[in-house]
Image 1 (cartoon, rainbow, N blue to C red):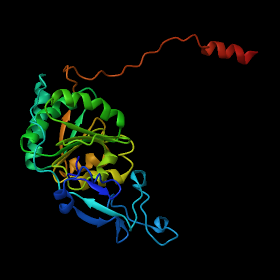
Image 2 (image 1 turned 90 degrees about the horizontal axis):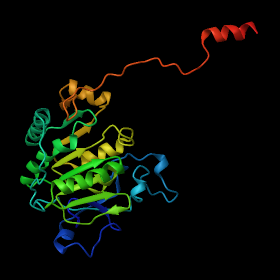
Image 3 (image 1 turned 60 degrees about the vertical axis):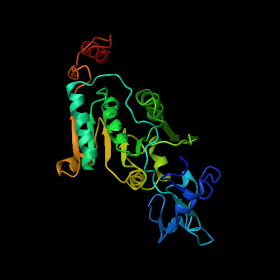
Length: 287
């Protein structure tokens, strides 16, 4: 990523790949300041104190130790688009999918957060394609993230086929494609390495572990963003539904799959399995 929009420790910076101008433009902040981690925004407690008296952060320790002696380099976000941003996907959206897609575009233009609440198989990825093309045309820097690595691996080839001439950076534990890109596909943990970098963040599988139970990851999403956030899920949390109810979060709802048939309703049917009947139990009691 050549440092654009990233928040890295000194050891994480690839100094050989960075132009001198990027180094001089970087802002330097202490890893921990006023008993708060500047990488994940966690508040320090006594458990975060080392015998030497230094503070260290336990919450983002999996990405490497940050202490009050650590220096974080925050590089300015990218302002130009990398690649042509043209949508090369040739598929068609249904009327409902097109409606939701237009709502997503309006959300981006209005800089509002939105929940895309759609059943599994509704075509959430395809509904994102027009939004991504619209945002890239406006020079936006975009991150599509998920707490699950398998989701990232599934989305990568689909996005690469939909935007053939737009490079995509794919980031997850043990995998860092260091390329120039306006479109980043990553696990939510990787956003801890970005600061005010993205004009649009899309969080897929927002209900999945560990995002749903680890507040640090939600803080990472907000710290990496300077624009709207779109949440994708088939099962929104009660907190999200309350935010929708109180009009703090816009919502697009789609309860049909792309084939337009309603979801099947489960039916209960009794099937004989050869197990003992009530008469059998009465015979056993007499014995």
